[in-house]
Image (cartoon, rainbow, N blue to C red; front, side, top):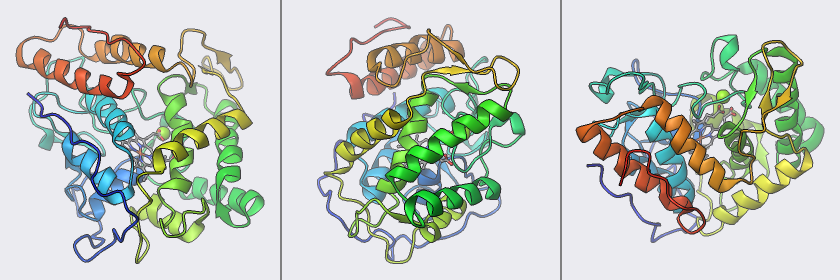
Length: 331
Ligand code: HEM
Ligand code: MG
């Protein structure tokens, strides 16, 4: 059975994380990297294994140690991703594409495709990655980054900040509506889209500065290369949880786009009343378990069922105070 996750960090202080023990080593041939610049960076600095094949415990320790993410958010992101992109039999997940290093797969329709897998967590209208429809949903896209730079010049005096996040997030949604006939923006993607826009000016800004202003030079390092600036200090881990929550609310409130998608043609955005909205926490949790996870694992047996149940219990932890647990495979 998968082990229980690490708890909150004892040391949440601002401190040097691009240190002698964690130098930048670019990925070698075969190392997995994907759509998340946070995980890519942690792997290239050795907070995660360089090959990009990871366990949930490794991810939680890495995001807490390397960036000052709080335990509850780390658990939510880690187990949601593990449940849909990882291998529940071996407890391994690729932070990029599918890899034989995660071990023998459980039966289909399970995908075990790594963090690149489209439409379970990775989704459209990313800031520096293209939509799946256009052929590559995970590599750094210089054209999109140039647009991010243009928005930072226009709205942030050259830096990425809260104002740039609100405007660029909305712009990318409009762009996908206008160009991607398959554009989808429903739960859970709708939540991660606003979350990531906030992560960028919280976790990628040096913790000694912590002013929510990210230079384009530092941004390029994280998004393209998975590289921390020299002398980079992580954020104050006792503050990031509130910062993320408040920032997500502010980014959403500036341009509240409700869940929906195009219906096969461009410019046909239609609201989806069945999808949880960004504040429907318990419906978001329940639908993820009962719809998203069950579609991949309709009838698991034996060790597979046990391990899925354990991961579902761990995923539930982040909403335990507010929602009732659901048990698709019995208790
Ligand atoms: C994007 C997973 C931690 C920053 C993503 C995506 C996934 C993901 C699946 C793709 C979503 C999409 O844009 O389509 C995870 C998991 C984490 C984690 C499982 C484990 C806790 C972090 C951390 C940071 C971060 C610690 C920042 C330090 C970002 C950013 C994006 C992103 C900025 C958006 C990239 C873009 O839009 O171009 N992450 N992430 N993530 N992640 Fe992470
Ligand atoms: Mg994406």
